[in-house]
Every structure is written in structure tokens, then in C-alpha cells.
Image (cartoon, rainbow, N blue to C red; front, top):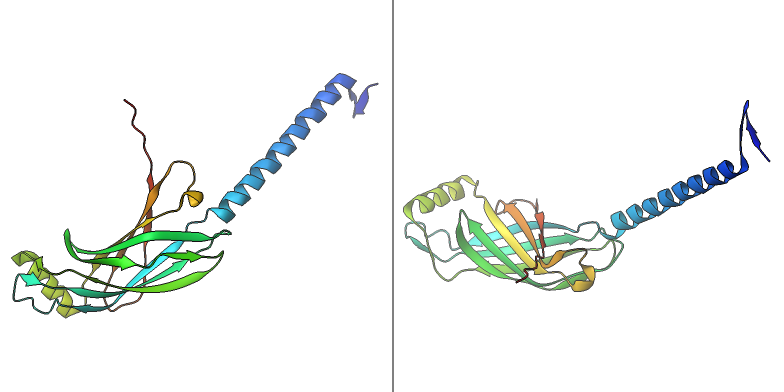
Length: 196
């Protein structure tokens, strides 16, 4: 039996093919939409914001040797629809390419949509600064314009990794001591495998 479409008619076998193609297209669109929705809901990237609440040990800038201490605060927001955990978190403070201090941040797990604030202290026993760095640091500190980099390295549990994501995650923050929170930039490290 032929189907009429205006003045044209489709044979029954062509009508069946058309229905099959349309059914496949609709199912494919539904599957792609569902996958996109799931990926955006479950794999949103957590956000990290860092702040240095207090800085000590940099006032001896007349000497090339300083003993810095930083009080550090970190806010983590989990926008994901799944629990998020991070372990073995280390924080390192840099001025230029010089490490001024480091410390550890407590491990944590956050439920879906949750936030937390953590505090830590970062220090370094003896930091040797060359004349140029010492002058720049002293000048920026006096002017209230000191900017340091904070690097956060943490382990991502295996069940939270996707595709070829490495077990370690890196967050980089540009922080002005004594000022508000600075949003960190995430760098997702990828695993590579070498074959002989």
C-alpha cells in the first residue's frame, strides 16, 4: 500500500526505511543529550580559592637570608553531583622562581554541592634571596603590592578520574597577601604510557 504525501506517494518499503532512519536519529539524539547532561553534572570541575591571611619572617629584608611563614586559607567548592575527595595535598609558595615556603593541607571529602574552608601554615627554615629579589620583595611588601604564586598538588582518587587523567591534580593561584581570596587555575595532568 502506498502512502500519499501531497501529490507524491511513498512505497511501503521506503516508508519503513524512513521510519527506521528517523527512529535511529531520535534515539541517537536522546543518548547524546543524556550523556552530555550526565558529563556536565557529574564532571564539573571543583573550584579552589586561596588566601594568605598573614605573612611573617619577610621583615628581615636587610639580610639575604629570610625565614618566611605564611598562614594560608583555602576554600573548596564542589559543584559536582558526586562526592569529591582529595588526598596528600601540598601547598608551595613561590616568589619568582624561589620557594618561600611549603606545607600540607588536610585531606578532605565533600558531598555534592558542598563547600569547605581549610587552614594551614607554610614555612621555610632558610631562604636565600639575591639582591634583586630582596629589593623587589621589600618594595612590593612596603607598597602592599606583593604577589606570590601558590601551587597546590593533590592526589585524585581513582574512582574520580576519567579517561587518561593522571592521579595528580595541580592548582595554581596568584595571591596578594592580606587581601581577599584568589581563584585558582586548575591544570589537569594526563597519564602517558611508554612502551619499549
